[in-house]
Image (cartoon, rainbow, N blue to C red; front, top):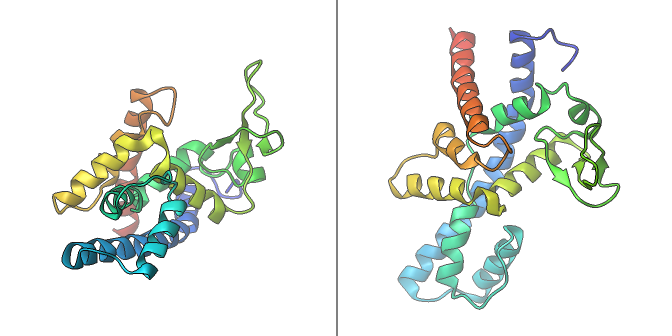
Length: 218
């Protein structure tokens, strides 16, 4: 991205590159969600799930980091339907832009890390230049941007810090509304130590995202 002049040209290149990747990952999640919704409907109407469906339920529970327990299928389905859902495209894109300096940061260029994700195993990524004394985290390295996007979505959909985001999203679904980037941004309070200030900056960037696309389409 450093090859593009800062400003509108770099923004356009960044969005054009990342949008299809995010859309594809969200589409994969929606396939899982559709399977869960079918199971939920079958359970309501038939009172039980087939052996094949139970195996699929176990697989999705593992995929979405649902702790193993003895909960009934209905309870597991309720939790999984809060986790197996999209993160709106504008929210993913503006967070990637913010965390990676529009794809120009050292971590983006050398580790495909667009979202500032950390890891805690020695050698799992890159050591930040300004890491505090005694800190052991590294900025996680990914083999590809696809992998980084998938990891970000997994983090949002399973991490304890983003339970509020998932609750907001589920509430919108119950009301028959599509999850919106602006609404879900309120669930990012713990993405940064800057808390409310960070959320407000993300919201401002979402507004700018829509304005930018309106300008491009005009």
